[in-house]
Amino acid sequence: MSVADARRPALSVKIDNHYDARPQYGIDRADIVVEELVEGGLTRYVATWHSDLPAEVGPVRSIRPMDPDIVSPLGGIIAYSGGRAQFVSMMQKSGLHNAVHGGADDRFMYRTGERRAPHNVILKAPQLVAAYDDLAAPKAQFRYTETGAAPLSGTKSAGIDLTFSRVSPRSWTWDQKSSTYVRSQHGRADTAAGGTRIAATNVLVLRVSIDGRYGDVPKTVLVGSGKGTLSTGGYAMPVVWSKESRTAPIVLKDAAGSEVPLGIGKTWVELVPTAGGVAIR
Image 1 (spheres, one colour):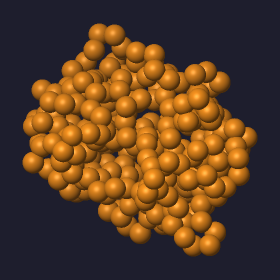
Image 2 (cartoon, rainbow, N blue to C red):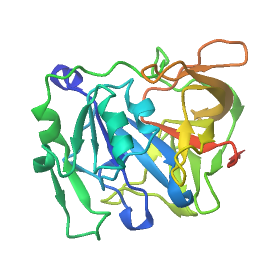
Image 3 (cartoon, one colour):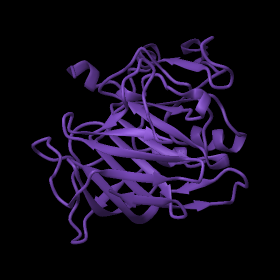
Image 4 (spheres, rainbow, N blue to C red):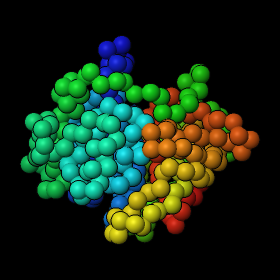
């Protein structure tokens, strides 16, 4: 990563995970991806690119009430296709630059003919970031090992199976050859557009409560604390996570109260409801 690239702002984008939205554009190159429960038991992603910026990312979709808590520590740009007025208002108060489909930054988005609406809004990522390159670069969101290698602690594990709802099972399997976890959804290999298998150095599972105040829209409760599991380097270890405020990063600690580092590389954060399921293999 060049010095110039390191100084650019983070680009976070709300990404569709509906069946008709797969395979997604550029998702395999995101630095951090957060998966969250939405209506109907489905999930969506908040993906963040900084070190590697694809030409196009998407499909871009609408925001949800927990998204300001996810992206506020990163700063920079948040791109989305709209949303309920109260959710948009919440995001506009986050301090990030809001790039909204149909708004002033619509010149950086278009609808591809390769997908059906509403699963077809694509973002021209480099052009959008270049237009707002005066925004600050993001701070590190986690503590990382000094050597860069994944910490070999915890229990040796072949992977982890997750259930957000009865219609949203997915799994991560440790791949010794690539030293990453490869992702599957509904028992099938999960790939990005172009065919690259989605993989991560770190898979961080946070068990979260769901706030039902918005009716049919579930809100993940991310400000607070809870239990979780970090899978990295072929090992899984229990962690305690905490997030003090909307703008604070997530902090991970072990049973002794020491901060837990991640391996340097791509990180997926799975916000699995306490009513869902987590099984370490």
